[in-house]
Image 1 (cartoon, protein in one colour):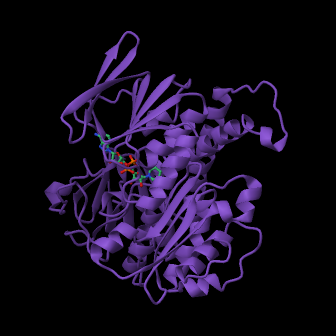
Image 2: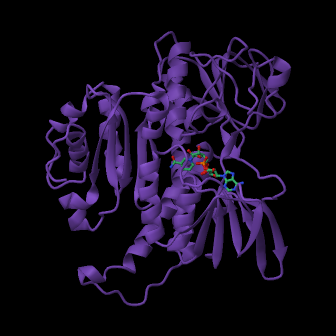
Image 3: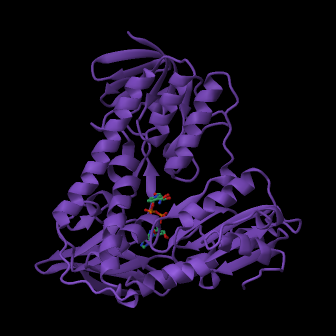
Length: 460
Ligand code: NAI
């Protein structure tokens, strides 16, 4: 039996980062992964391949609309095979990069699916390893819809939608969340008619409502069709494609819609099966998430859990923060994550980025707040690049301490970083507004939104 200070189960962004950080802190560490390549959902079938497809499809879409620049392009050919091969190479290079980082940091990589036969033991195939601490970082998987079988041919999860060999004529996406919008936009740009069906009466639940509306308007302008207030009931396969039956929510009526393919993107659920948690007595809540305390310890001493399999936002960077804090605590240091300053980004065009509280949440809690907003239409850099859709919105206490920030706009995912740092350091809207911002830059919209919260935006 090999003895480790820490065995991490799962090599996604939570697990592999935790393993490396623990090794840096001097622990003897192994990381077990059953997938066959490192990096988890994010690198293999999530964040990274979807961003590769968003970039390629974005370049393709841009070529069709350069006339206002005086540029005309002849016949544009799309070789989907090459586009997909580029995505696969990026994924391959990055996942191999983690293997290199493991070697460099002295993390043992154990290949196979792990279970925990007893506290302090991890079994992989016929081998059992002993570990003072075990960290479960097993991530999440797409939520299934009852009565709808995902075959990854006609009825797709996000995994299947990353590897189609042709653009479907009509792709229906179920769920106007992050995955639905990102992958919907990829295939819309590559030639599909895309209809997004959403249960709620709005897109992007959890995002500030005003910003989500701006995003819906901009995405509609770019070709996505939205059918809100509808839930998928069933999918029938016929000779000429799929017939989807939708329930009109709250209306007791049904309608049908034809599609060539359907993508089910209604959320993700934690993966904990096969680990033996029940037998060990590890507490799992009604939704399947492992319950942990503020040190990431489960109800069984010596077994920890982080990332998508514990409550909280299912985001790669949140899992990384969890992982680092958890192993720092195990090593006797002071790990901590401020969940109020975890940003979220949707990488559509325009991007949607947010951190902290939404205006709806502040109203519901009866919190006193001031708000500032600045539209990119009034930002000179946005005007010169033609990226004028959207706005920056900041919410702060009456004294100016930032409570939340929300952006719909080009490069919003990068712009939010300034406001995340401001929130983390307790900076006020006045302090952000008094920070010199380069001109002309999209970031000036952040400054102006902060000025607007103080009632003194210059260019509004
Ligand atoms: P989501 O929770 O973001 O959105 C799912 C949507 O489906 C919701 O709007 C919900 O109301 C709707 N819905 C649920 N049941 C429905 C039904 N029967 N019919 C119609 N609509 C229905 O989930 P999504 O997009 O699947 O993403 C899963 C997770 O992955 C999220 O937690 C997300 O944060 C994460 N993710 C993050 C990315 C990023 O950071 N850029 C990219 C992709 C995923």
